[in-house]
Length: 317
Ligand code: FO1
Image 1 (tube, rainbow, N blue to C red):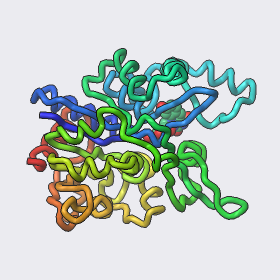
Image 2 (cartoon, helix red, strand yellow):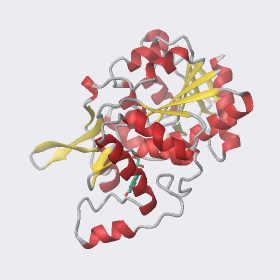
Image 3 (cartoon, protein in one colour):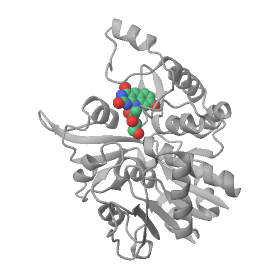
């Protein structure tokens, strides 16, 4: 059994821990296709937050409270940078985490593609799943917001971290997407999958940038495997993060039904065969053309998340 998961963000990384727990029990192979739209260059270093969240979460090295970055982190370099007044001062790289960005940047500068760099970094963390960036090409999510002279586009991290999503987003633009190609292994993974899962990640800034890579959406919709999505919205509110602000920008209702309808039914030009929603909060969720199943969706621990994954796979059958 080959499970392929499209994922991004801290929620997606937590979901993957449950997928891995399920796979250990059943002997399944797992491939994670990870969003790169959050990636940015800071202090000369290439930072890939979603790839690192997956790597650290599965490697047992993630900070449990923040969800991103390393557990037991120290911040000496950040404080020293602040001493110089270095910008950006709103995006902090921890000392332990810095080693990852240094190795990545060195390898990228030497000409290795991001997929090869990710494989090399994962050798240390042994995530137990194959971790693939959606693309090796530069693809960055930018957010169009009202500015002093009309509108301006700022990097997603500036909107998310610096402004905490408070500047009203008018549009999300996936810069570089038009000329991006799926990373090696991505199309093959989708073609050989027995089930494809959409993690409960932000649909607008985690899953949409993956699907914006030309050919990737077609690989998914043309796959022989069923596609089951897990709602990132429970009872009208995001499980984590600011999906509500992102959904408002694209005029989608912040509800389990709203996100399911945004993804749409595979038979009707959309993505989904099945949609998993929370049993207690969204018992009446409805997505035309898609089989909706209700289960407890809170990812309280890996065992609970693995049960969600088992339910998603039952639905896929
Ligand atoms: N999130 C913050 O809220 N503040 C930060 O300073 C910050 C730094 C950071 C550095 C490396 C990294 O991998 C993630 C980091 N994040 C930070 C998290 C990140 O902004 C987002 O949570 C994700 O991009 C959304 O998935």
